[in-house]
Amino acid sequence: MARPRTALLSREIIGRAAIEYVEAGNELQVVPLAKRLGVSVSSLYHHVDGREGVIKAMRQVLIPQYLLAEAEPLTWADRIRHQVELSWRMYADHPRVLQLMITVVIEEPDVLSFYSALVDALEEAGVPEDELLTTVEVIDAFCFGAALDALSPDTILAVGGADERLARLVAAQPVGEPRNRRVFDHGLGLIIAGIEARTAIA
Amino acid sequence: MARPRTALLSREIIGRAAIEYVEAGNELQVVPLAKRLGVSVSSLYHHVDGREGVIKAMRQVLIPQYLLAEAEPLTWADRIRHQVELSWRMYADHPRVLQLMITVVIEEPDVLSFYSALVDALEEAGVPEDELLTTVEVIDAFCFGAALDALSPDTILAVGGADERLARLVAAQPVGEPRNRRVFDHGLGLIIAGIEARTAIA
DNA sequence: ACCTGAACACCGTTCAAGT
DNA sequence: ACCTGAACACCGTTCAAGT
Image (cartoon, rainbow over all chains, first blue to last red; front, side):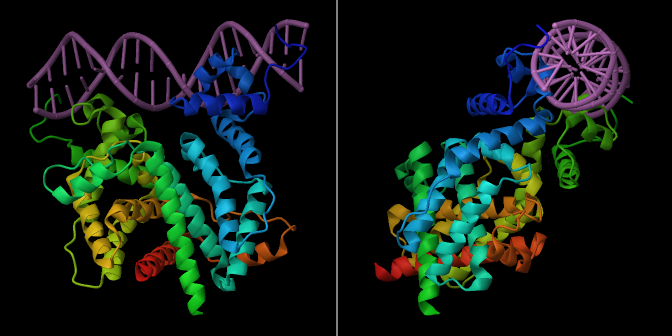
């Protein structure tokens, strides 16, 4: 077969397969990915621009799947929670993909409307104009870091006998996905409480 | 030369060279690294366990260089700032290394005392026992995410004509390292303000 | 113990050839 | 336009051989 009647590949097919492949714990490699798709390696190059292109295709699959949602008429704090929850789900469901996406530039317009919605909510909260964008970046950075936390091993701290109290706290702490979710919720709560405290003063 | 009188290599030499190499913008590759060290590739394998081992050597260089500091007698908030500033500097000075370190497990005891110091400060702040570790993880995740923000391009948001207000905010925003620092300071401030607000109520 | 050179499997990318 | 097979440069790792 040289040119099949119906195309075997597309950016989307490649993107989906790559997400599945990476999230299964494999490194993103073009050769095994092609094999998995039952296709010759060079075929991929007709649809995406090499390995970098595969990563972009992955994001083009994820963004619309997660970030598209209409604004809900709630308090600003809940609107922030609602919006951030969207990107959090994307991050938390695909931490390995996220790690790859760090390296490539974002161009999607969907992301823009996401940021825009956050800015709206923060404005309503009373955050001063010159802090709006920085605050959005703070929230984003936190989500990012919290999601990557999912990649670290269950026992982040291999506590020796030295610090008994720390050892006790670690033992009492949940592990894996529940820990991860807990960190996210607690951190977002603190940030929002911080915003409230600041704007209440001003 | 087969076995030189004074060793040409050591874990530390390899670690330092790798940090320099990666932070210069290169991918971490064993072959070019060996060439840069003026040494045969296989020589590296006598000191570190492959590419993974190089990454561990990098961290073994950075941790003692940054994280060792004695506790200062300040308010809990300033002690948190002081401690976090240490790891922040490490992250912010070496974001590319940081990205590599995500993948490998942390075993250093130095990191432990760092966490321990944070727990102390939070306890003094009045954070309840069962939230201590989660709060530490929140702070760590934020630092992490904020540092990785340094890797994203200067124009994170390629704002089209659509959202004029967002475009104006982006234009007014600093860029590069100053932006990065600003995000860190602002975020840490919000988190601390959040902690204060929460503990004041309880 | 520490370094070398050769060898091997494998990955990313390109390109001429096919429909 | 879309897929293939072959080819190329290069990377990570191993191993026997040298001091």
